[in-house]
Length: 348
Image (cartoon, rainbow, N blue to C red; front, side, top):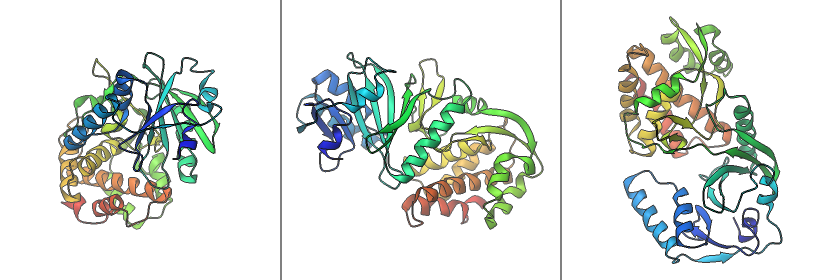
């Protein structure tokens, strides 16, 4: 993103800081004094201990005015025009650049003059990112009340499109394993229809259309039960979950969601991807951890074969969605996922 591009998000003449630096920017924020820089730099993502220490050093440098600033040269503030009707209190923004790849997008945290978070804007201009953004707007517009943020506006913005969403209260969930009990309560709240036979489940009918040979082997252990229909988040990980002061959890970033999904896939995904991306576990170790988590939950009443099948399906579902985004088979995380559903990990 060039300084000219930043004119979409910052007022004319703004002095902007890039973290960690201008050569490898992940977060852009306005240089508006120590306290505001400190608060807005909290949007910089970090979950592993080393990453949190690194983020702390970046935030301290930004608050102390040590980071390089550049000036936005523009004659307008498109972000204000886009948000004016819904969020007239907008005073500043911090811009987080998404993970590089075909579906890379931009998330903008919107704050008022007192630096209180007002909402979030997601912006996309790449084809895969636009498809995901439009899908998220559809999902948020049809979610049961109270499950996700409220979509406030969707439409053209810059060279792409933008989705304006309400802010949910809370702090990001810890990435510790096993997951907290509140996570299970949240997933139980996603159930939207009573159990149906496997062959009649809408999610199963859709995936069978893919004609993937492995699917029959994974679905067979699930065939003797009926399964509820549940909203499936699709990217259910700690950095997409917020914990309120009373312990209530809410999920954000719904671009991979399914309104009629299969139960327990989100939990398997959570353990697998937290193990991979935060704890750096091998596919076999992650699958073993997921199996332990799914099997010990008496409320789920899952036997070992059913839990293994769900782990395979969760890994395959994530692999398939990333492939749709344009991620190549030799992408590191794709290789890792394939080792789950295509190797020995699911039968360990």
